[in-house]
Length: 162
Image 1 (tube, rainbow, N blue to C red):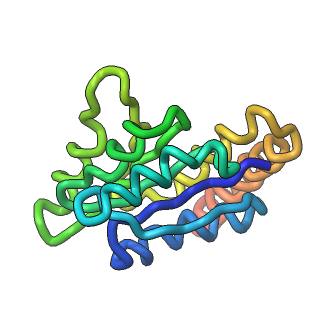
Image 2: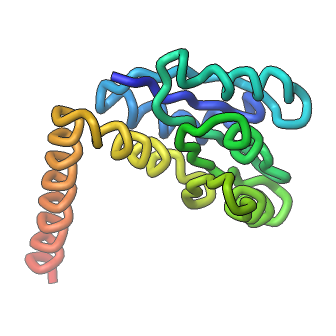
C-alpha cells in the first residue's frame, strides 16, 4: 500500500494534524509526518515533494496557517495528489489560510478541505488510495454504513425522548 505524507508548516499544527494521523491509523494506512516550511525550509519541502512518489507515497497532505503556501509549494514539485488543510490562527480565523490554499493557479491543483479539516483530509487521501486497493475500499464502505447507523440511532433516541 502506498503511504500518505503529512507535512506541517510548524509543529504547532500537530493538534490539528493529529486528527488525520488518528484516521489513517484507524484504517491501517501507512504514513509519515514531517515539519517543512514553504518559507523557512523551501529546499527541504521541495526535495520531499520531488522524491515522494519514488519514496512510496501516493498522496500528500499539507497543513499550514496564515499565508498557507505549503500545499501549493508541494504541489508545484510533484504530480501526486496534494490535499491542503488550512489551519485556523488568531488572524482572520483561518480564512486567510483557506483562501491561500484553495486559490491555486491553473495546472497546479490542491484539493482543499475545511479549516482544521484534518479528518476529512485523511479520509480523502484514503479514498484516493482505495481506488487501487479493494480492501481499503471495503473499509471505507464499512465506515459509511457504521456512520449512517449511528445517525439513525440518534434519530431514534430523539424520537423516544420527545
